[in-house]
Amino acid sequence: MHQLKQIHAQMIVSSRIDDHFAASRLLSFCALSSAGYLPYAIKLFNKIENPNQFMWNTLIRAQASNKNPDEAISLYVNMRRIGFAPSEHTFPFVLKACASLRSLN
View: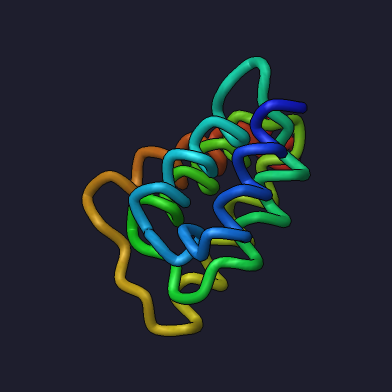
């Protein structure tokens, strides 16, 4: 994570943080890697202007695999609320979160 934070800082300084491909790779590592840190991924996601479908799906996937899958569903609802359409890749992650809800067990 220390090296990732250095890369993130360099991206901010060089204005590469607006490059959706580079930002999505950074987000993916933070959210999905065992060496990543999900709270940092959430902060990063919240700073990205107009996140793309891959970014939304990455964060929903990470939240669905987390101990609190309610957050994945909440993120999906927020995505829909702002008018962003889900893709065919979104639904498996949302369904996984629904299946993991404690209230259904």
